[in-house]
Amino acid sequence: MNTVVELDGLGVRLAGRPILEDLRGSVSGRAIGLLGPNGAGKTTLLHTLLGFHPASAGTARVLGEDIRTGSKAIRSMVGYMPENESFVPGITAVHFVRLMAELSGLPPSAAMERAHESLFYVGLGEARYRKMETFSLGMKQRVKLAQALVHAPKLVILDEPTNGLDPPARHKMIRLIKEIAESGEVRLILSSHLLGDVEECCDAALVLKNGRIAANCDLEEERRANRKFLEIETHGDNGAFAEAIGSLGCEWAAQGNGRLKMVLSNGVEIRDLYRIAAERDVQIRRLNYKRDSLQDIFLKAMEDDNRGSL
Amino acid sequence: MAVYERAYRGYSGNVTPEWSRFLVLPRYGLQSIFASRFFLAFFVACFIPVLALLIMIYVSHNAKVLQLLGATPADMTLIDAPLFMAFLAFEGKFLGFLLALIVGPALISPDMLNNALPLYLSRPFNRTEYILGKLSVLVLLLSVITWVPYLVLFALQAYMSGWEWTQARLYIPVAIFVGSWAWILSLSLISLAVAAVFKRKLWARVFLFVTLSALGAFGAILAEGLGLWFGHNLNVFQMNVVIWGELFRAPVQPAPPLWSAWATLILACAVSLWILYRKVRAYEVIR
Image (tube, rainbow over all chains, first blue to last red):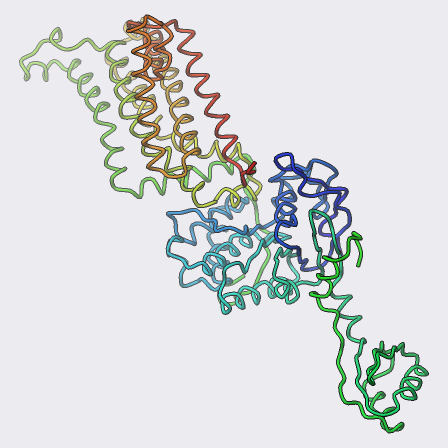
């Protein structure tokens, strides 16, 4: 998969204070989650990629364009949904989205057509002739998403898109983001401090801590690996059971009290475990896929000071 | 993407040239300004002096009308440089200033108040284009009430008065054009800069009005009371009149040196541009 963002020793100082330091690595995927506690530098990184803040050291490339030399080219490929409430007052939603499309280079007629379509897409078709001052927070968030999509960017950057939304509005927003990611026509960077949002939508995650990369992981890969990682609670002679499992090529570890952790080898299915247990008169009382959740990854990254890997 | 499908779709059509994108802002800006009936009425009223001068030019060249009015050509005010300057000064200093007071803050303050700048500047659209786009709204409106109609009136007067009159007064169209542009640029930039500092339109208007008036009054005290000639330089209105006076060959008194008048306007423009570039940012870094 093509690299979306490459970080090459990127450093950013604002008001003389280092905010990002020596960021290195590359991120690819259809939807990339940008995680980190408040003040980790998520928004500063996004702003630097968009050219709002100059890099004080190193550089970065977005879809192959260097932020130092190709800022305008980057912005023509990117749609940005800012974190804060942002809109142009005094005009209707459709005119606002059309204005943004025209500023991105769409001719007026195409801009108008796509403004209508984008607003329908985000579920605001019926409200498109209302002025934005009259919108609720959830509606304003969706208009911001519409303006980020209207010019058909290659990459959409969403900064805390579910901020301040009630559960139904959050659910709608997440569904939209997943749809966009699954369309395959556009890449996403989703910055959030809500792990659930990132876990639901993203297939890669970059975790920042104190302006440095604390983790850079492929969530798809993690999910695939977790699919074969089991936790079993047994009753009976689990030593013989474990040895039999081991003879099938599975790795295992006893945890006491009849509990076993194991990684199934290729070709071994769950029903094989039940068969072997039955043959040895062992009861399987509990069986879980042990998932190394994003929360685990995040917490490990927050504890671990080693940068760049988990 | 067709509306009924409601699915995400890319765009592969034409795009507009990059240089022309700043023109999107005046189109939307003018549309929103003229949506106000109050502004429309005011803008129409700005043409009353133009209409008055047009009537004066017509009457002064129409013997029948003069006869009807019981007047002779000698009774009519001489249509010449001082008259053009007087009308243009009223148009620019009074109506033009009111127009800038109404329009300038309405162009930038709402964007600043509602955090719209990240939306503009996250597109292939930079700060210079944003400022140029907003500036062009004021430049266009002020041009339509100043140099454009007055050049037309000069052409009419020249047509009616003949080549000899025109040849001797070719400096008038130059004065109308250059004088108007000097005033339009300085006034527009000052009002946009004030609008960028104050996020509320009302405060921006009050500050603009009070500051320019107060500076003028303070300058007059310095100049008249303390005899400091540069006191007048604090009054941008007066500086513009000095420039117009020289351009129309009708110098005004008391007048500081012409170079200082130009320097004042250039300095005002430079400071305004500096403020605009400081304030028009996607995000302000708080120190």
